Length: 164
Ligand SMILES: [Zn+2]
Image (cartoon, rainbow, N blue to C red):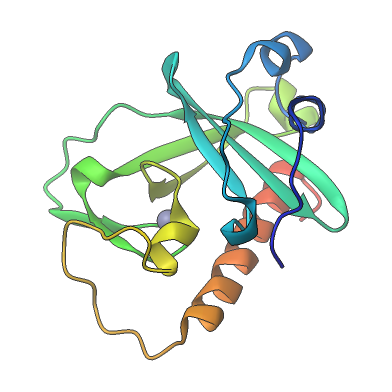
């Protein structure tokens, strides 16, 4: 279930929870290794508090604009990504929140989740990137972990879209 390569216009047109102005002005990544990406996630290099997810969801391309919270001052030493389950130090995990797409969003309702700060979830699952801390033992295969991640990404998309 790899992503099909997308061009800049397709990516910009996919956004469901931000203004057209924001979708037009956001920085779209280049050199994406499409064949090993299940979804596209990136931080805006020109606006570090902004992040984006583009997901193929039920035959539709859904782009979500997210806000990245500043680093947490928590007593926890580490935390787990809500998509891929990778354990990170607090420096490598970020609370992302997205405005919901419908009426709730217009009323200021957002949805938040802790994720890999660089949004490179599938690179961690595939072992292309290594987290800074040792990982708890997982009995699942890489393919099973990717499947679990896709399920969680899909659920987040549905909750932002209010279809769930
Ligand atoms: Zn992750």
